[in-house]
Amino acid sequence: MTRTELEQLLIQQKAAFKASPPDLGKRLKALKKLSDIIDENKESLIEAISRDFGLRSREETLVLEIFPLHDQIRHATRNMRSWMKKQYVTGSWFLLPSKAYYQYQPLGSVGIMGAWNYQLLLTLSPLLDAIAAGNHAIIKPSEIAPASAEVLKELINSNFQPEYIHCVTGNTQLAKDFSSMPFDHLFFTGPTNVGKMIMAAAAPNLTPVTLELGGKSPAILHDSYSVELAAKRIMAGKLFNCGQTCVATDYIILPRKLNEEFKEAATNSARKFYPDILNNKQYSGIINEDHYNRLESLLEDARNKGASITELASNTSSDEKRIMTPKLVFDVNDEMEIMHEEIFGPILPVLNMETVEEAIEYVNEKPKPLALYYFDTNKKRIDWLLKHTLSGGVTINDTVYHLAQHNLPFGGVGASGMGHYHGFDGFQTFSKKRAVMHQKRLAASDLLHPPYTNLKKKLIQVLGTLSKV
Image (cartoon, rainbow, N blue to C red; front, side, top):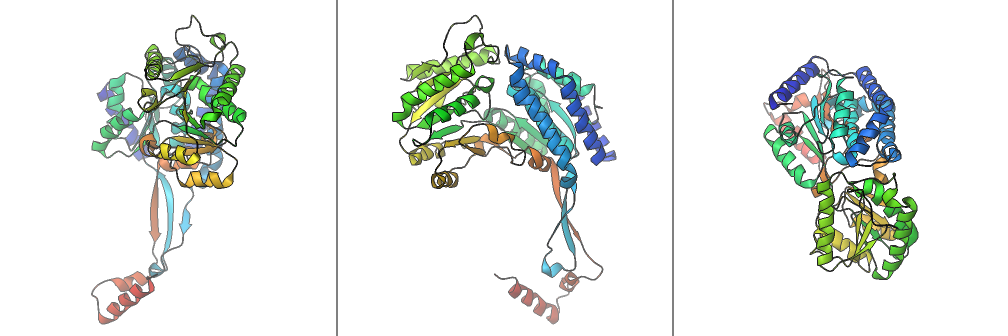
């Protein structure tokens, strides 16, 4: 699609929205259609996603993308009516007898840019939030996963009118054009460096943006917690989609005395999850050769700077070019690239720090992470950690799953993003929370109009006194 065609599509959507903003019935119907599309075409979606990765198991796509989408649609459908209601608030006493309330109204036509690692989920999840809020939308799946992008385009465009919901696909030039369009809101999921470019492109139009970015999400293990249980849960979250997950543990901090125990537990977990890993059809491939080579260069850089790398797989040779086995990296330091870049692969650096305080100081010196994981059962220490850190989200004694809580917001902070979505927070992101005051025929505020007579001056003085704490 050319820039001119994209501009015309946006003009068409804005005109259609202005003529008839979607009411509750249209929103519910659209969400039901979206759910039906996903269900009826799940096999073609699964196959396309697997083709993009070279290998992605059917079960992984069902669990990590298709099931969450159905569940999010169900949650939105059940709650949308209450989200749309007027919410009355207590009015200011000096403006009596007015009534005050707010209500959420759709913004108009929004743009959504998906991400390749979970093409289906990360494109359609914000879309369903936008639909629930009553918007029209243009979505752009990632060009890095072209097979799933084209299937999404076919399914969306054959089931929705272009002036309501439309999908466009194309190269990086289209992505640049897309981010510079005067949408009423722009939603982007992707890496931090690209997020900066998206924000800069949106700025001339004053387009509000939601940026769901990434970063280095740490896991901190207290020495009183079960190493075996922590390793199992860390490795489970880390190896989903072969580590190509924005909230996967990017590095772990633990006392040095736990290194061998963690190595053994992580190895056992990885081999239990994926026996004969290089021939295991439930273990995902790396998205493309460039990304695979990037991961290899991170390992080589770490090795050259003194790191020791532990292979967790039971076999290490394969004819598959884009299968990377899980690895732990010990003796890491901040001179290594692996401690600066988001890894996005099955590689887990291990940092040794003896206390939680030391670990938190290290984390706080870095850009704020998208997720923070802490393994401990001591409530006092947990509360202390929550008070002294800031991250997009936190999971205690597990990893990844906080993003599946519909009634919690999902989003980053600082370098890991801005804004939230999922559930009501997604509805709110794609809405304007508009304030409304309804005044009566006779109102106390009429007494505040000029001219300011002596009586009104005394009244203003009384108001000033009464308003003090």
